[in-house]
Length: 377
Image (cartoon, rainbow, N blue to C red; front, side):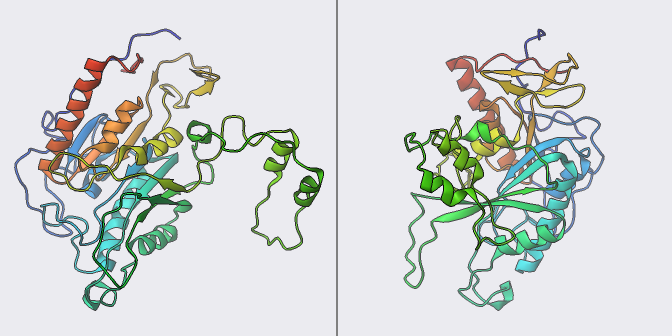
C-alpha cells in the first residue's frame, strides 16, 4: 500500500488546549475530590500527549473502547509522597487504597477495546500497626487485595508474572528475607484478546533431538492422575516427534522475568525499567491498525500486511499509562513505533516526562530515523 509518509509526532505540549491540558501551576486536591474544569468529554482521542490531572477523572473524559493496552505501575500504598494532596497511595487504610484503585480500574475497563489487556505492576507495603489494615510488621497484601477486587468486578487474571530484580535494593532487616521481586499482572475482560506470542518468543536453549518412542507413549495419553483442570503436552509431543525442540520461532518466555531495575537521572524516584514494558507492548499493542475497520495488520514473514480488504490507511496501536510518572511507557512506545497516552497528577512530573520524551525524540533524530510510517489523519 502506498500513501503519505507518517509525520513525526508533534512535541508534547500539556497546555495547548484548555479543554485537555491542565496548567503547570501547582494545584491542591482533597482526598476523593476531583479537579474542577476537567470533566468535559474530549471530542477526539489524544495521542502522544500527557494529560495532567486525577487518573479517574481524566479517564472519564475518554471515549469508550479506544485503548489497545494499559501498562502502568500505580503508587504503592504509603510508600512515596508524590507531592499532591489526595493522591492514590496516601489513603489512611489499605481498604481505602483498594477502593480508590478499583475506581480507576473501572474506567480502564471502559476505555479498553474488547481485545485489550491491562498490565499492572504493583508492589506491597509492610504495616506499622493495625490502623493501616494489618498487624505491625505484617504485609498489607495490597496486590492480592486488589487482584481479588478486580476479579470480583469481571476482570480475568491471565498471568502473575514475577519481575525478578538481580540488583534489588539492599535492606538492613534481620528478621525476614529481602524483597527481590514484584508481580506484574496480566488482566483482560474477555476470553478472546490480542496476545502476539510470536513477537516475544525467545531462542530455544536445547538442541533438536528426535523423541524416544517410550517418551512419546508416556505423554501421548492423558494420565490417570490428571484432574479436570490439568493441561496437556500434545503440542510439545508433536514437535519432539518431528525432531523439533519446540516452536520454530522460539519458546514462550515464561512468567519469570529477570530484569534489573533502571535508574533515571531526574526528579522522579520510581521509574519502570524499559525492558519490563517492552514485552507487553510487543504482545498486546498492534504496530498497525486499519483506519476503517480497526483490524490489526498481521506479519507475513518479514512484513506487516493488511488482510481486511479495506485498502485503507493505517495508524499505530495506542497504549495508556494512567500513572505516567517519568514517561518510561511513552518513551518505550515510541521506540517500538506505537502511540501512547499518559495521565499524570503532579504537574511537575508531567513536565519532567515531557522533557524526557522530547530528549529521546531529539536523540533518535540525531541517530537516524526508526522507520517511515503513514499516519492517519
